[in-house]
Every structure is written in structure tokens, then in C-alpha cells.
Length: 396
Image (tube, rainbow, N blue to C red; front, side, top):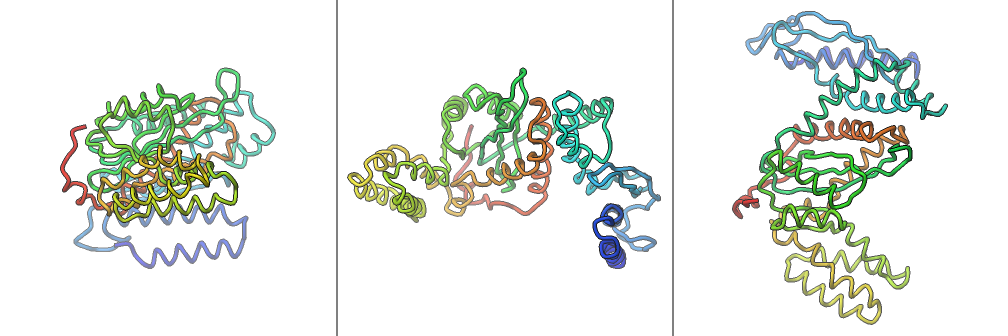
């Protein structure tokens, strides 16, 4: 077991560093934090603390190996704990540095390819803590691309729910700056866990790009799909119908409600329309939702005829969820789970502003989504899948 004394000592030293030196003490504090966390991880791995005798011990510590880690605050002098003959390596260190490597590489490429500004140079120095040579960039590129390519091409298996979306990042392409689409998808598996399934860089959300995205998921073994959840987009819709013609589609209720407000004849009616959309979506049964739909259409045929017509043509796309277990409605009636992924990607890419090429953009996005993926698959169950599985399998 991890010793409480080690934890208490680590916390005490961190607090002393911050109080005694303020912001200037952050670098040694980070060194303490990394070194202490890695030491605790080794104790957890071994099943015993330092010099502790226990029947649960799985191996023995074997000293430390020095390592210099470049960070935003400069070089950290770390001591990597070693374990005799068991191939131990601290995962806390690897997870904490992977996406930072990708961000460092993206900005470094701007500098090296002659598209930087004084601001980008300042960011590079603050972010990396040192100048980066073209040789280092090449080595980092090969290291990261190998890891990230393996993640994007790993086998998938059976997926019950597929949630898809796209975000746009500014990228230099063929001598100009474009908004490049990053296509993303995550799934909910038979075990009720979420997994990031795909990430690709495309020139747009045209059908051809979504079709390639879906083909790639299928080529990696994705099967058993029960439902696709997404916002409405013509290219995605056409590709979905071509690749998964028998899989139901749930149009994101959140975006559908936002679309509805644009059909209000005057601004004062937007909140009113938003409320009636919520009433439809919160109906306890499919029959009650259809009844509410009919009443809303009748109510607005004269007051807001364009909204009434739009509602009649579109609302059913947001009611597919009623075909699935009630216990799952909250999780699969919108694509908001993907919106949170997108928000994290945007937060982490904001500093880069403009990517020098599509590969650089995809590299950083992949670094971020791998962290999210690992958090999901090692965390708690997202959905209890037993109500869905009792409905029987799909042959898709």
C-alpha cells in the first residue's frame, strides 16, 4: 500500500515551496509533484511502500534514473523510479506530457516553416522553455505520429451508440488559410463505456469525407450499431444513409431546438418556441410526444406558419430516441457529449491560432482525444446496457 507518510511529506514540501517562493517556486514545486507522484505510482505497482515488508509485494524498487523534461516553465530535473525486471514506467508522466509534446511540435513547426510572428516566437519560448531545432522536430514528429496513428487505427469491435460531430481549425493549405474540418466520433460499447473511435482531418464536411470516415470505422471492425446521434448536416446525412442504411438516426435535440428558434416570426417568440420544443422532447412516451407535436402545429399554424411547417417536417428526426430504453434517453438524445470534447480541443488549440499544415492540426487533436479516451475507459460505467441488450442484437 502507498505510505501515508510519503503523501504527507509531498504535500508539505509543495506548500512550503509555494509559500516561500511564490510563482518563482513553481518549477521546483513541479519537480516535487512529478517525482512524488511517480514514486507513489511505483509503490502502488509494487504493492508495498519503501522498505516495507508485506506478502502482497510484487517486486522490488531499483533506484532512479535521471530525466530532463522540457515544460512551459523550462527544464524539470526528474528522477524516474525503476523496478527490477518488471518493465515499470510511470503512466502519470506519459499522460501528462503527450498532448504538450503535440502542442509544442505544432507551434515549433510554425517557427521553422517561416510563418511565425513575434507573438508565436514568444509563445514557443514560454511553452517549450528552449529553442527547438529541425532535427528535434523531426524526431518528435516520428515519435508522436507513430503513437497517434496506432491509436487512430486500433481495432474497435461492437459499438451500440455512435455520436459524431466536427470542429473547424485554421490551417495553412496550398498557400492559403482554410477552415479545416476535424471529423470526430465516439461510441458507447456493450460494456457501457465511452471510447473515442475516430479523428480525421478533412477539407470539409462533404459527403465524400464523412463516407471515408465511416468506412475507416467499419474497416477496423466496428459492428452491432444500434443508433447514430449527430447534428443535421447534408454531407453527413448522405454518407450515413449510404454506409448505414438500416441504422436509426437521432438528430440532436439541443441543436434541433436551436434551429426551431430561427423560425420565430419575431424575437419575442423565440423563448416561447424553445419552451414548446422542450415540452415535446420531455414527453414521457412517443405517443404523448406525437400528440404534443400535433397540438403545437395547430397552435402555431397562423401565428408562426413557417415554424409550424418546419416542425412538421423535422421534429420526428429528434424523436427516434423513443425506440430505445428510457434509461438511455438522457445520454443519447443529444450530441452534447461530443460538444464537451470539442470544447476541450478548442481550449487546448487556442494558443496555436494557425496550424502550418493538416498533419499538425490532427496531431494535436489526437493528443487531446487520447487523454479523454483514457479517462473514459478507465473511469466508471457511463450507461447500464442491460435494458438495450435485452432487446436483442443487430446485424449491422
